[in-house]
Length: 203
Image (cartoon, rainbow, N blue to C red; front, side, top):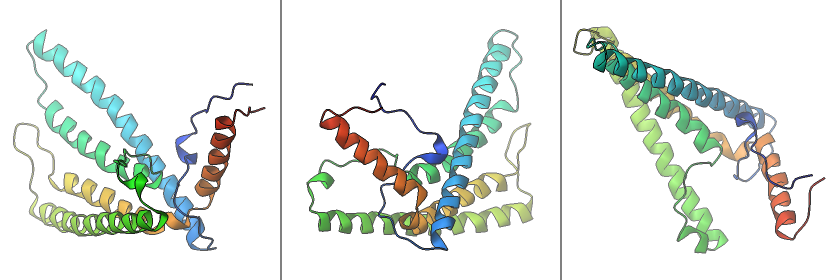
């Protein structure tokens, strides 16, 4: 059969984090990966919806001279959801773009130190900005503030989305070392990659 690697479902992508066994934190970490995968799928659905909304708006604007009043605020909110709901799963799966020109030249201890620094910075940023977004969302909700224009959306929704995305990202950073299922898959994937590099085949 073909030895070309096949893309795994989004719920079963591997994590390259060190595996740590814990009866409580392990299942929690794996469940968190599933939650973030669902958030990422929702982001993909919203991308498709925004694509149709934008196409419909272009047709109405330039063919029928009747631009949609609601398309711009809806698309702006959709973009916030797309980014904030996709980032946690990308971080959990270590599938983001990595600038490793210098990192891959580090020793094992140097890589560990770099990982600790970047994870700590990510955790602090996520918690500080996420909690700030929670406070802002609560204030805007209490004040009933809405966006400008003829089609008004509550401002608190945007900040609530930012808060959810960043606080889930903080949980991902905390629980990633205890992932079990995804780490095991990562180990199998690395073994397969070594076999392919040595000229082996898959059944």
